[in-house]
Image (cartoon, rainbow, N blue to C red; front, side):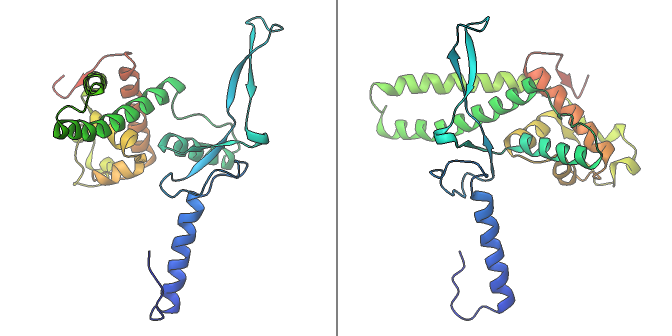
Length: 245
């Protein structure tokens, strides 16, 4: 954080104020959330959600009902990820075009993408604990159980990555230079695409630009379709693709 010591110009000071205000705005829980939820920059942008619980109800055929909950009528805050951002963008376009929004991905596709992200983050954090256990010489009776769980998570991650395959979401040789947006375009492999979107939270236009591709509606649509296919394969649907296939 920049500290104002009297030497900062008025323009620079205003920019700093705007920068800090933007950080606080992104860190502030969405409207409708409980007052006990703190402003947390590390959490990032959030949206208000209504927690639901399954309650017994003999009047329903299943014997249960879904009931909305919340502390004193307030809603909970949920961190926004790239899939929320993509849905918000689609909703904004739909309003502008006066049509019903169409979700970019199905619920199972989003669920497997988020599971992959959570597994990778959990495994990365576990690696630090494993190193700590090795340094301490085992870490006690619970050390073995933790190592077993760490290995199990690693196996699940590798299985998902094997399902993604080694294919190319955007292969340079299949697209004319004019459609690529330039001669600097490089291959975007399926695994690169999945990791960029699911793990790094990059939107399709950012992925295209980082690989030298032109940002066009057609190229975005191609990436979106390629990611959908990857997510289907990660669920065990479809077949793996290969660059040599």
